[in-house]
Image 1 (cartoon, rainbow over the protein chains, first blue to last red):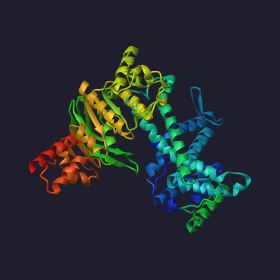
Image 2: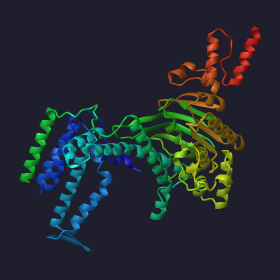
Image 3: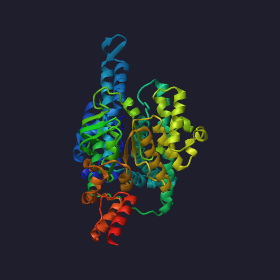
Image 4: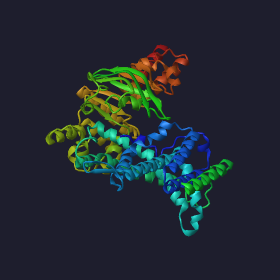
Length: 264
Length: 285
């Protein structure tokens, strides 16, 4: 099991400029990056976007190897996307091999899609790597705030996300523990056909569900015991503060997106 | 069945910024038929250490032999080792899954490929070891049992594999005094009857002193002390530094001695203490 390779959703604490930015800045920045990656067409645009991401990684002081490792679990999807695009795009034929035809347009499109995916994955994983889950949901709650008027339950959504994120590592730990306990009794999670493997998961999934429900129950009681009644009138220990570096960072991000998006 | 560790190091999350060393240069040998207690403060590496005894964790560096088989060698059949070294995790009842007690307890033997009759026989024996009635419980759902019964069923699930070594990670955590006493008695009975090796992880100095023949004290992933209970509990100062203590009666004898009574402080049980105090008082009377 290589759960731990998945860097998306993981958080690496730090004290770099990127870590200290207001989460709202980083969320908007990430949204801008996604928009940009989908509007840009042409390699120069991607190159500029890649340079921008590289600059952010450098500023975040995260180890490069660690950031890039997040790509590993998605390698299959990546290869499939590139492959399908290379082989299935019509156009000027470069060479034929058996029933496969490779076209000039196909190669260009495949590489472009591949680059886009890599930049998307790396760029968005930077958000969670440098922002703690609590900050992240605080940011989302604050950004959704204006939509409360039209009935968006901003606080409830944010709370649900906080809890879900908070329990990912807990449930992963729990999964590992139960797996080990069943492996100690000779369970086998690795071999057998598809049906057999699915059946082998029962001794893992049943205890996992039972424990998830137990934890949910305990959490609900703990929250009520501390007087939780929803978001109305609730104050925060850590107030979000939009400071000068945020203004600078956001201006740069907007300007970059507009310029690169408009010209490439 | 002996277990031998040689210069074992274990690091979690190696190669990430969150890398932590859980075991540092651990070497030890546990002989066939020993009753060993492993004690240490929270986070001292006890749980990590015991998972090396049946190959659930393999050392980052160093080697582990169980019964002469090198677990760190490539191609070692770890499943076969796990049938021989039974492991009861903390709160084992959280791992129950079967629709019936019979299914759950029989999971281990069934995975070992035993015929169904033998599985049933083993379940019957395993339940008897933990003081439960096979006929009464076999068709019940394990989820409907009481907390103490769940714990027993879960322990029976490991016993049903009839392992030569039994590892228990705080088997009495969260039980009431009566339940604790019964489970420990049952473990002792199994050890007596079947002559197996027992490795017990515990936070209770009393249990360690009373039950084990040998104590291994861990501190920050290293073996700090290793010896008989009397030898280890002589190191009162060291134990206190490590965040551990003495059994209450031993503590009492130390108190008495510091108040000027000429008592022997190598006392580990209430009975021994009673005898010793009577001896000293008799001499004074």
